[in-house]
Length: 111
Image (cartoon, rainbow, N blue to C red):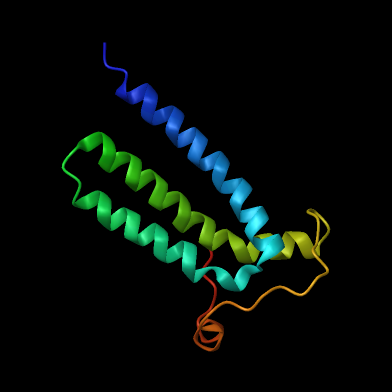
């Protein structure tokens, strides 16, 4: 029997579930302006998956990278959901990300 498909499915389920968690936590503690950093990590993981020789590891890296790219696009929407009261809103000031000046020039992505 081939268990790799089931393992990849379970891993995908787990990493997507973790994506919900880190998006909510990251927006709560840091704010949505940090979106370029998980986006960059996701792109790097997807590119690394292209150069990985093993198909299983390549799939794991691609799934993880895609989840981080998706999460980066959800940070702005999560901020809106927190402002609407759907999620807990952090009233404390959030730290500014490095490179704030150029981050504000780029519109936050969304799907």
